[in-house]
Length: 211
Image 1 (spheres, helix red, strand yellow):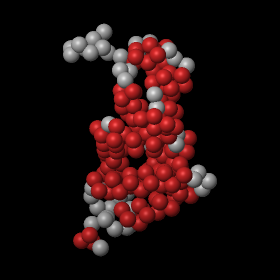
Image 2 (cartoon, rainbow, N blue to C red):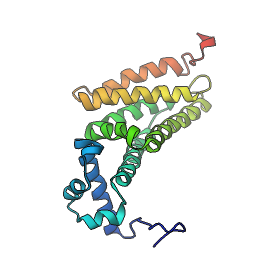
Image 3 (cartoon, helix red, strand yellow):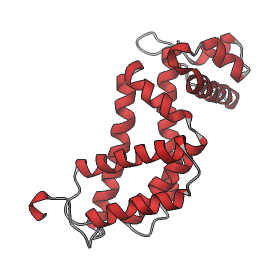
Image 4 (cartoon, rainbow, N blue to C red):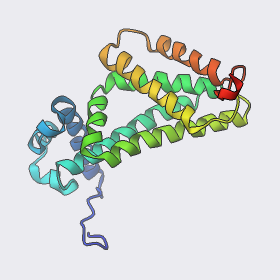
């Protein structure tokens, strides 16, 4: 089937097709995570996935195409892993602790995510920005909902969301990828104390006028 622009729709239409596409994405994560985008190859991906070359082109147009899809897929995996755990939070501040804790867990079992997302900055700038902008947007929504419940002081700003995300990203790199020996609960608790003292309902709101 083709769309109005004459391009073929490569969305899987069967459960088997979805399994094949998933196998290719998982193989791409291994290939690019190990070799990087430029050294990784379509043949390497299909070999890892146990698929024929023709199966690759059934679902993806090129190496760039599957890399772009992989960045979006990994971003979605993080969201889907973290989301249900955050839903169990006692309050807005605890939600950020659980968010970091679950992200550390994810990073430890998917260490390739850092190389893939970092390379996206140079391979596909739009996918790279979308990954971080959507993550920060979800954090900001949580903060504003917490503020409405009186769990966060002041009026949460985009800066708060990006600051928390930035902290999480580098803690994930240090304690998820480089060294996974420290308990994730401890890392998350220490980091969360900074948030609680900074924007918690009993702390300051991050406004310099209140310093």
